[in-house]
Amino acid sequence: MMIDLIWAFVGSFLVTVIVGISLIPALRRMKAGQTIREDGPTWHMSKQGTPTMGGLMFIAGITFMCVIGGIGFTSQGDWRHIIILVFSLMFGLIGFLDDYEKVKKKRNLGLTALQKLALQVAAAAVLVLLLRLEGHLSSRVYVPFLDVTFDLPYPVYMALAIFIIVGCVNAVNITDGIDGLAAGVSTPVALCYAAVAAVWTVHSGADYSSVGLFSAAMAGGLVGFLIFNFYPARVFMGDTGSLFLGGAICATAFALDMPLALVPLGIVYITETLSDIIQVTYFKLTHGKRIFKMAPIHHHLEMSGWGERRIFAVFTAVSAAMAVLTYFAVRYRFGAMIPG
Image (cartoon, rainbow, N blue to C red; front, side, top):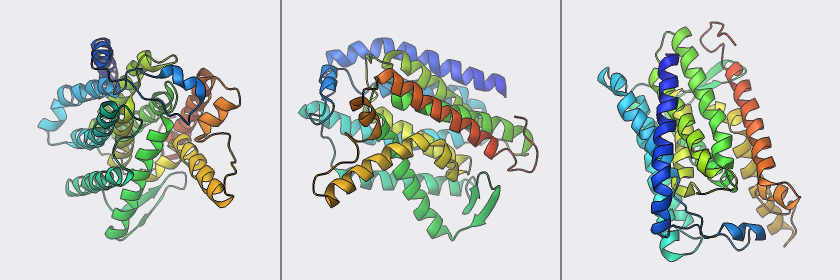
C-alpha cells in the first residue's frame, strides 16, 4: 500500500505544479485578482491584485489521482475516495461562486453569510447520508486517546456531524489569511490521515486504502501548491481552494469514522476560529474594546511583529506535532498494537 500512497502523493504533486504553471498566467489575463480587506493589516495592500482561485490547481491534482489512481478501488465497489472528492468539490463550488462574485464586483464580498451557510449545511447532510447509505458510517462516536466508543441516536449524530463539518470548513477558511498558512497547516493533517489509513488497513481487517489514496493525493497537491503560495505568494487559493480543502479534511475524518480526531488534528483551525469569536464577542460586550490587536490570531501576531514566514513555520510545526499525537492516539482502535 505504501507504493500506492507514494504514487498518489507524487502524481498529485506533479499535476498540481503543471496546472499551476499555466493557471497563474490565465488568472492574470482574466484579471482574477484578490481584493484585499481595507480593515486588514495595511501592508497587505501590497498583495492587491494577486491572482486568486489558485486552489483550482491542487483540486485538479487531487481529482486526477482519485479518478485515475482510484480506478482499481471503484472497480471493486469502493467509492469512498470518490464520495470524499465529490463532497469536497461541492464545497469548492460554493467557494468558486463566492470568489466569482468578488472578482466580478471587485469587492471583498461574495455570497451572503446566509447563502453560504445554507449551501454548506446541505452539502454536509449529503456527505453524512452517502457515507451511511454506503455502510461506511455509523452513529457510534469514537473518542481518540480514550479508545472508547458510544452510541448516539441517529438524528442527534446527524445534527452533530453537520455542526462539525460546517464549523471545520469555515475554520479552515479563516486560517487562509496569510501566504501559505492554510496549505502548510493542512499538509500534516493529510499525511496523518494517509498514515492512519495505511496502518488500519494492515491491522484492522478492513481496507482503508481508497481513503489513504485521497489523503496522500491531498498532501501532494498541497505541497505542489505551496511552490506558488509560499511567501511571497504568486497566487492565493481563494475560497475555491479553502472551502474545498475544509471539505476534504472533514470528509476524510468521517470516512475514517473518527470525526472527533478533528479536535487535536485541527487545533490550529480551532485556535484561529476561537480568537475570532472571542474578539467579536468581547468587542460587542465592551462596546469597542479588543483583546487582540486584530483577529484571527495570525493577524494579531503580524501586528506584534511576527513575519509571515515565522507564523507559517510555527503554525505548521504545531499542526505537525498534533498530527503525530493524533496518530498515536488512534493506534489501539482495533485492539492491535500499531507500530509507531
